[in-house]
Length: 426
Image 1 (cartoon, rainbow, N blue to C red):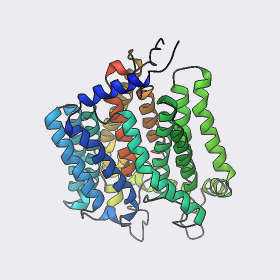
Image 2 (image 1 turned 90 degrees about the vertical axis):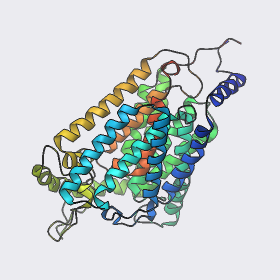
Image 3 (image 1 turned 120 degrees about the vertical axis):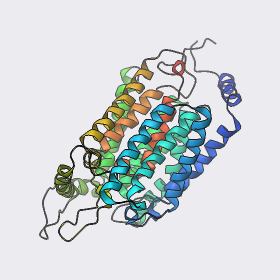
Image 4 (image 1 turned 30 degrees about the horizontal axis):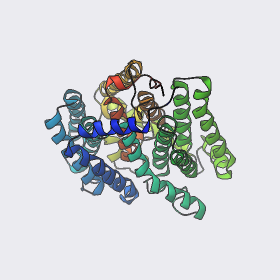
């Protein structure tokens, strides 16, 4: 009769993977676990003006450490060297443009260094494909987000924190996006990796923590990811409807809370207050985007350079200057111009194409790789959706989580992805 691989087969597969993994690779998992755990737990410890300083804090030290480890692995393994060099070159060029615009300083190169660290984490996972598998990458995301999720729920119950719960993240919207990725990862682990009850529990905890932040863009992002996951999953209509139903429950739960419904009503306004300042997030975003267009027109082809939209000092005449744009497409248009944004979007298109091709490769699946490319595609889609109204790529924890999952999915051998496992005969 048909069945999933037996426990003996699973153990044998794990031993084969372990035998092919070096001691250095085995150390990478605890290294990444500690670094990501510390990075997330200290995210709210950064000073409010941290983007306006060139000093090396804890988050900067972790970023540099990722870069050093990635450089060592690239020299040793030489996996993905050309794409890595091209991405770093792209970042270096537009960091140099920022130096030309604002002058050489630690503050000027800060954003370039931060984005290189995200690439570095991607390189680490891709070169450690024997150790950092997609299930392990998902576990790392769960580990990093679990304590912040509990803290956010505690803040909701005790009415502590800022105006909205944020866990240990720098902002409620940052927390919401990280919880959305963690919830999706937990659901993928539950549905496609053994249906362990604690994965179902973690899905509920992360979804509840997201609701606790009362982040509308986070809510939309999670709903989009879960819906896409359901639609893209191979199988019957019942299989596809499961994640979609969960998305509907999360949205209804958000609207069912008094603060959630009140926030929907208040934040849908585009009015300007009596002081001349926007009185809602939507109005604030529209006004901020309007101020960025003239900045882009000053250098429409190559832009102002990486990080310039967030390092500009505000003034009495422009209090929105230096504030995050809350739209990554517009931010990259201003910072890298038409050329830079076109290259970035082309790279994203190539990434999506690579994951789509992974879905089409036939072969036998080991446990833990079912729907792996679909899962990674959903994360990419979530980031693209969230980037419409938020600073997705300015949030290092979000970028690190996405890089973990996408790199682990791309590192899967072609023979291990694309189809459901072949049934075994007992």
